Amino acid sequence: MGGFFTFGKISVVSTIPKPPLRIAVYVDGYNLYYGRLRGTDFKWLDIVKLFDALLAQRDQNEQLVVVKYFTAPALAHFATHGAASVEAQSAYHRALKAKHKDRFEVIYGNHSYDKSGALLPSFVAGQPCDRTNRIRVWKLEEKKTDVNLALCMYRDA
Image (cartoon, rainbow, N blue to C red; front, side):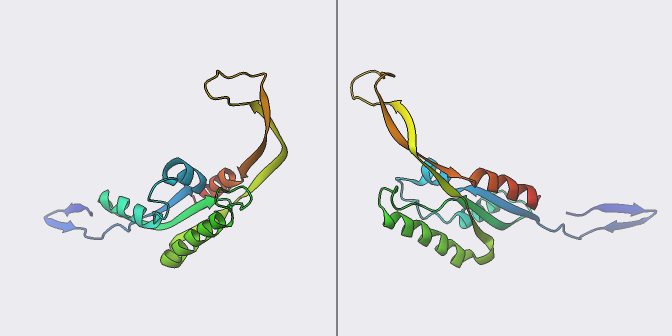
């Protein structure tokens, strides 16, 4: 890092190191959990440590400043394990905040719940899908996560 300059017969070598490139990581927690971690031994993945390690392997002049984790709070009455799911999610977030202080931040969205639901084809084992045999299901969606993530990236940039 640095430059080599020649002035007449005098050579000057610049040894001023470049400051590290500051890195922020944005994580969609819902997709991380349901896409990669659910059902594995890695539910308590230390994502700050993971990205520190990934940046170190790149052998570049980079510094992880913050991991911003976007999610919605678990809802006990919809979660498979009820209140235990809510407590596990909360404990995971608290553990990462305690370990990494200002380097880990959780940004919460919310859930949208539609009791009127949607009509979907009913599943009958061993039979092809029959679009006329429908069942009403509740519609539960995570909201604001993608919007919060995009707005945060925009503001940080």
